[in-house]
Length: 102
Image 1 (cartoon, rainbow, N blue to C red):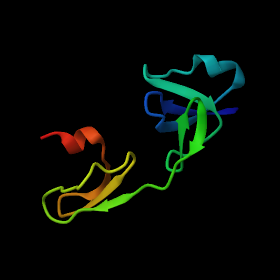
Image 2 (cartoon, rainbow, N blue to C red):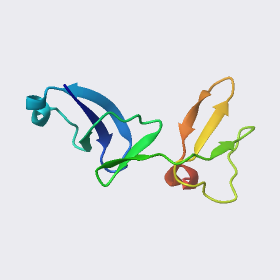
Image 3 (spheres, rainbow, N blue to C red):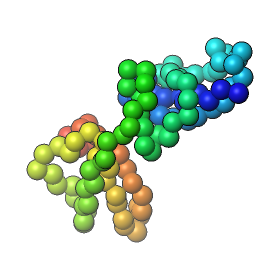
Image 4 (spheres, rainbow, N blue to C red):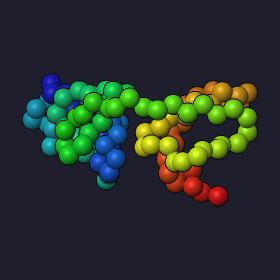
């Protein structure tokens, strides 16, 4: 069996790792925006760029208290916000679009 990492081609985000017999690799079903590389890579510590797995840089953390979001500047790509409230206790991904929509 061969390890294959499936990733979101436009962003490089690792989606899942599968195993396939060598003679069935070309028959693996992929979504339209997915691609694969050989090997098993963890999406928490790696991403794919130019067809190669790369170590994910340390991510910034933004802590927000209260109801609103206030930033002096758009956080760098890959910033993760941790929200703790009676409604949400999880992490969310921030992107420029979500921060600039009004």
